[in-house]
Each structure stands twice: as structure tokens, then as C-alpha cells.
Length: 101
Image (cartoon, rainbow, N blue to C red; front, side, top):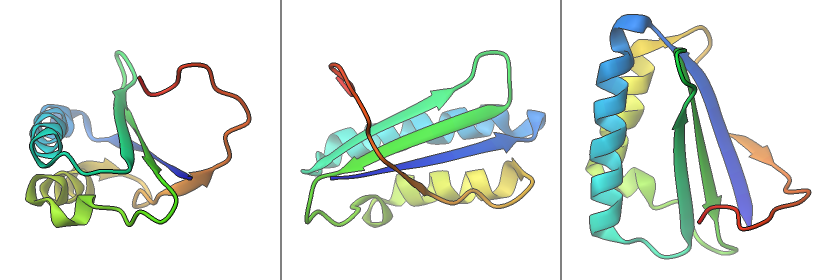
């Protein structure tokens, strides 16, 4: 299992665009129903910070690049992100209880 996190800040005027792109991406992912992933997107309340978590089962290649709405989300984030470009960071799970659903 691989667990990746992307954390970034968005310019205030781009928050609505990113939220809309997230909603569209998740609708497309729900329609595609790719196997072997768990996907969670968070927006820290009253801030411009977003966090995405993606868990890939062993041997599963990330299906998100193959989903147009997920690519659009990535482009929207790139357009509005503040600071360094967001990049996925691998995480090690040290403990979990009913995580991701």
C-alpha cells in the first residue's frame, strides 16, 4: 500500500475554482469507480489550505491521470497555488482506526 499526501495553499480568489474542480473530479472518479484506491480531499476551514490523500493498493498504478476531471483539478491547483508547486509526499501509516471510510 502506498499513501500519498499533497498539501498546498491557494490564492484566495482561486478557492471557489479549486472547490468546484474537486467536486467535478470526485464525481468523475465515482463514475469511473477505479479499483485499488482510496481518495480523500480536505479544505481546512476558514483558510486557503487544501490537503489530498491518496491510497493505492499494492501493484495498483494511480488511475487519476487517466480521468479528465482529475487532470483538470491538477491544472486548476497549479493555476492558483501559492508558493512552490504542490508535489505528492509519501506517508507511512503508524496507526489507523476505521480510516478512509
